[in-house]
Length: 101
Ligand code: TYC
Image (tube, rainbow, N blue to C red; front, side):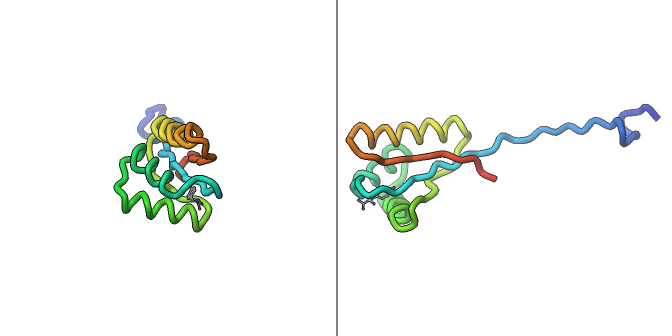
């Protein structure tokens, strides 16, 4: 009864969980021009004009919008790159990340 395959008290429970994906979120502000937001979405996230415009408008109207979902490192790198593009042009454009449930 010390067999690991039969005793429920000693049976190993391999708990291998896939790392969570992280959302990149675009946050609205009152200063960054719409065309600039669209340009950054196209340049950093590989969106086309139509996709980028929809995401920008959603953030503009609702306050924020999920842009894409990636492994944590990639999400953080892209959020930083996109936020830095705004800062470099003098705009308060902000991209954040958060883990998916
Ligand atoms: N609200 C900005 C404007 O009216 C445009 C904008 C949209 C800025 C989305 C940021 O995440 C944003 N110029």
